[in-house]
Length: 170
Image (tube, rainbow, N blue to C red):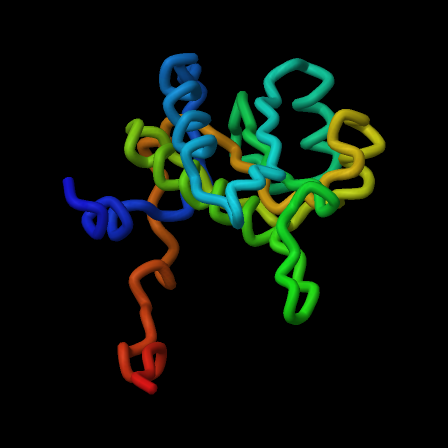
């Protein structure tokens, strides 16, 4: 499968089956995240695998968007460890964490699993409930699992703006 075929095939899966996810598949997804490029190779990110009862309860306490998952991947970055662009002092922590998360999201699909990028969560509360997350800008929670047989893409999934609306030659 080509990269564009993978990107087209992937969709935000909002209904996961109860089948457990194999550790080897999680390891492959984590490896994809670790391989992601970061500004000046600072690697200010952290990936957390949430599967303990306490971690699962904490996630359920901060977002309703869990979709039946039994394991979650959380991605964040430390601002003080990230590269800062000298010209305007833009901190690349969130950019780096987002690149890592995107690699992982696509690797989840590549492993035959499903997910959706959950950004709608109470990050401060999650950091209170799971102190290991404190001090990180949290950019994503991925509920990970196998797509339920009833899962399907949103009707909005295939709608894309035209190239002329999104691309400019300067």
